[in-house]
Amino acid sequence: MSYGLIFILLSLAGSGVPVYGESSSDNTFDIFEPVDRSEYVLGAGDVIQMVLEGGTSEIMLLSGLGSVIQCQVSSDGMVQLSGIGQLQVRGLTIDQAETELQRLVSLYYPGTSIGIGLLQPRTVKVWVNGMVQNPGQYTLSATNRVSDLVRSAGGLSSYSSRRGSMITAQGDSTAVDLHFDRETGMPRSDPFVDGGAVVHFGLVTNPVYIVRPGIRNYNDGYQIPEVETWDHIPGETVSDLMYRIGGIDGNVDLARSMFISRSVASPVWIRGMGISTMEVFAGDTLKLVVQGNDIYVAGAVHQRGIIAYMPGAPVSAYIERAGGTLYNGSRGGTTLTRNGVEIASGDNALEMEVLPGDVIEVPYSWVARHSQEIGILATLVGITSTIIYLTR
Image 1 (cartoon, rainbow, N blue to C red):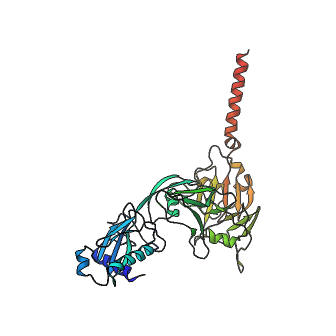
Image 2 (cartoon, one colour):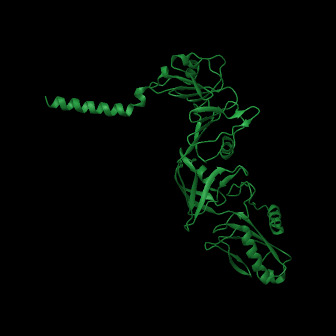
Image 3 (cartoon, rainbow, N blue to C red):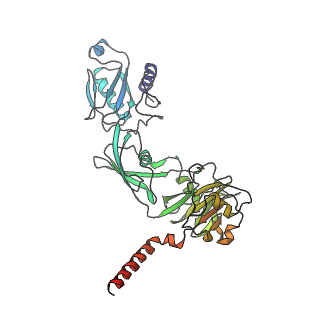
């Protein structure tokens, strides 16, 4: 960090002006971490703070050039320094702009150094389309990244690729890759959003499925375990995949989590061996199980999701705890799955004792699963009956 920037921050801290990198109730932007000076590109609307060091001469004061200058980048990308002139900073990083400003100041006042910092970032309007929950235009801070835009749009939709693109208003294309890098723990390519840009995420062509535990909510029903799709990368192992999806929560029970490849279930973690090094293929599933006494109830019940473990209770008790079977459910087709393997079905499953981590599924009835076909058939039968009646 340059001495100029340190002086800026100290000056601002003493003046009560909100500094970028602080959270302030008076600041329009709720900012919690400093921007990367070598990456953030300045544009129209950014407010920057400039501090001159090395002494303030009488000539500088007469020209209106003070020791601390606050200015906004104009619509044409310029900043104005009294007594010196204008400089085009749009398209420059903060570090690059500081270098150019230093060059300009040195022409008029040798021995004077200048440091700049971002005081308040500009707002931008960005479009996002493709495989997101809520496509459309969003207004964000220029310090936000594509991943922030995705969150604002409700997240990626099912079967969305984590790879996409951002086309700027100038027509330039930037690759987006929200897979996590194993070395840095950060998305591989998560650029700052650019005003007028369009971000697009397409359909994943070779998915790998990740089943994560749902969220407990006893007051408002239950959420079923979340299923995510991630792009398949040839040659990747289970260990690699777990890093790429951003790691796992601390309450995940690796010993009971399963990796299902080509219909064969294998443990994700084995004592004395660690995380599985099996190769991952397109269509495989990584099923993560949480620690603790949780049972999953899915399918045709009133409240699908997580239910607390009841020692000794059979499957039927958990179905009742989940609000009972829906009118279009098939209780007789219930299945009980343990460690990724179905161990019982039908009436036999209803009386089996349930263990932590088990999954109970009550299927929908044949009529419910084929309601559309039945409706079409009923319509055809009705039309046929009418025709027969009219021709009598």
